[in-house]
Length: 390
Image (cartoon, rainbow, N blue to C red):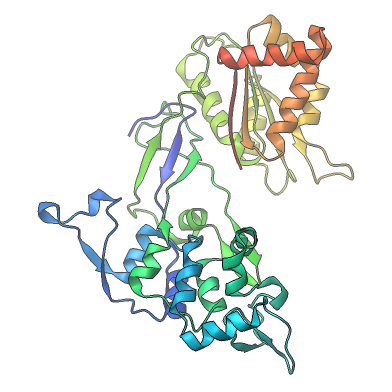
């Protein structure tokens, strides 16, 4: 595999075996039942083009997203209910309602004790019929639930093996910005991955791929990966051009690659490299902190940091950008620099662009429209590049 700074590493994860077993237990299906591997993964095809088969547990672990089901699961669950229960549900015509004696009615009309600490509250769990009748409720219902939660919610409704597989999406690879330079070691690649662990509906949840990497694979294990090319996020061809990089959190990854590439490709001086990095606290999540500080001391980079929770007033990268507006304008406008943003598209990237527009407007003149046109031109010529995600 070969890559350039700005590319991403694609990783095909495996689902957590514990999560697979929980799904099998809720579904009542046999883990050893032989099923066909999805045709979307041709490398698993058998001899003479035959589709190979594996035990259901292994197929669920390797090929299917067992978190976010297709909405079709609701209709199949409804159809699987005995006719008597469907009639009872239709006659009720209401979402789950609080019952008496410590029980509540779930979607299929079955009473369940409130003592289950992992179950969602009745008010959060509409009836199966209500969900089928109102698609707007489905989005809210599915937002916090994995496939196993849906199966538990609507017992005794039950799906066959083929029905279950038909409502599961393919398990997709995850992309992580590469944080190393190929000049460092052509046989290795580094990625900077934030481990995802949280609680939802009273249950512990984990990120499929982040914990696959952090907890479940061992040294010398073989993992299926590929290089995802990102031609729209590249260093300037002219290494004398300055680069301004804004990358809080794991958004730092490609910029570490950029910096290393420039420092290793030549001993000749390059354009100024300015990095804006942000995290919560310098003693908790200051990624590559010692290396960044070392580069800054050597004069290799100009470093601005924003530790949002380290003082009474929250500070973010866009504020550091505002404080150094004169430098940004000089490098961008007078020296033909390139401006990069990597990280969260939900709030950070927008806030950074808004501040960049303010810097341009205050120095360029001509008002907000002129500033926007200037930024649009930077984008068209490849001097304003973003690699952001939600």
